[in-house]
Length: 347
Image (cartoon, rainbow, N blue to C red; front, top):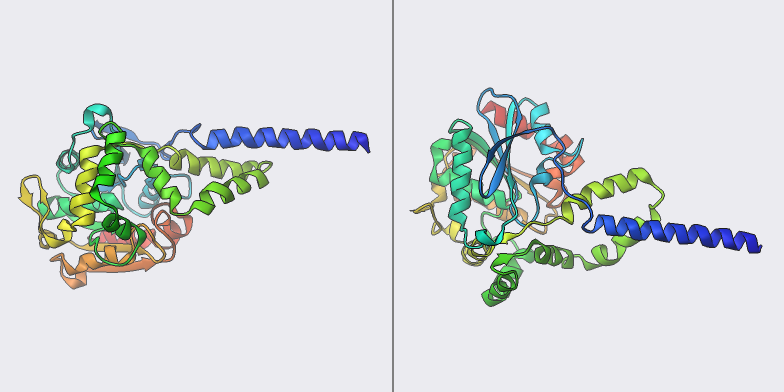
């Protein structure tokens, strides 16, 4: 009995050591990595432009989210890569904006600086693209389509907050109920940057039980399951590696887009022009997640009210799942994005 107790104690001790090591690795010990081979096409101040596939036809540019995480969400893993899904379903040439973490000398960059780099990327790809905007990359894509309609052949907005006054999601409530001074203080604490670590803490606090208790229980219960751990490490390599944003850019977005809703109202000034969403006339696909609590479906689908694209050239689609699943969920990529890809190819 004593020998058995010693062995059980040693096994438990070993499992606990493995658990602690895995937790350290999952929370900051991994780095994001794109899943699909690519070429670095441009190395701009705000982003690296990644090139996939081969030239042919109108390129499709994915404008990745720029809200504190890397572009890995668009090229996440085998079977969960939007990039690979587009390539596998008839688009020969795909590019991806891989937004960089902001350094202290970038703290005063504005939305205009990022729009300008996006225009450079489009021009380098030939001057006309199919533009796929994910989340905050979506409102940037809409700005480009409104400002330079000849540069956009077809527009896909997925989980993109275009009408930020629509719906009743937690992000809308947070933006309206939190004083601007709070956001300014966070930027000041970050030395003029909005630190990705602070934003990550905010995202986690939306679901505290999951992130501060259940996730650790899951790891402990699966510590002897290499396949489960490999999937978890892939996710955490993206989720636990946030990027910093320029403070001026961030405060512009909070104030002008999320508090004042200037883009939907036609009052946002981008690259020295007041942007009117009625400047968007190209075929447009609006994709929303039914249970998305980051960008509620109304914020995406209501874009149809503001753009000038004919109704028969607008597709509105709500699919099961939440926010992140729109871009990297295996089910959504398998069941919905192939049809979106064919729609893009047909334009």
